Amino acid sequence: MADDHRTRAQEARYVTALHNELHELACLIGREAAAMVLDRHGELHEADTKASDIDLVTQIDRASEQLITQRLRAARPNDGIVGEEGTAVIGTSGVQWLVDPIDGTTSFFYGLPGFSVSIAARLDGQVVAGCVVAPAINAEYSAVLGRGATMNGEPISCRDTSSLSKALVGTGFAPDHRRRTRQGHMFAAIIPQIRDIRRMGSAALDLSAVAAGQLDAYFEIGLSLWDYAAGVLIAAEAGALTIVEPDHASDRAFVVAAAPGIADELVALLRAHDADTV
Image (cartoon, rainbow, N blue to C red):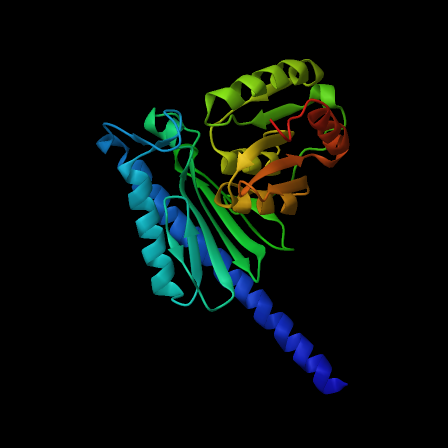
């Protein structure tokens, strides 16, 4: 019995140390990548497109992902890595990194502050650490599973909003015109029921804003894992209610983060107007 207790205690200490290591590494590399991204903004002259003319990617997105991948592989060579710009490293350690080298590329391209570098670590399929660095606003949001969330090293918590009509809600739009048209009809029905809508252009930053009490809620459909992995953990650790509903056919998800006092009402409103399917 005593040996079993010691074994469990040792395992708990090991897991805590590993979570801390992954968190520190995510933040360290996130800061370096974010500083590089901000420093190289002046080099931008053009952007490529991916799925549509709306969906931009720049050479700096690729450079950021390359830097993050190199640093992760140097520090933890047996980990897996998945990145938005195509990185796919199969690991053997049980740890997988989820990397968005610039979340909010359009904002970045146009010189707007709504962009971030997002890095999350999954251990055996569960996100246990995440960091979102927004260099244009000097903000670093991070969390460790079960340990709460911080902004620039200080503890944060979501708002205690209890009235949906007083809720400031963040969102994003799909990168194709037909879905945007359907979303426009959906927003027309939802906006009269809330205080207002905001769109910063970065899902990771929007989710972090919910965590910091800068938004009352956020929702979006069509997100990839690297878009939301760090942000959902940060929001949840700050006390927000979070919902992630994957669409296995498209490998994308409907994501909600909201102050607990409005979460049920908001989700019901969103579903009533097909926000989870548009």
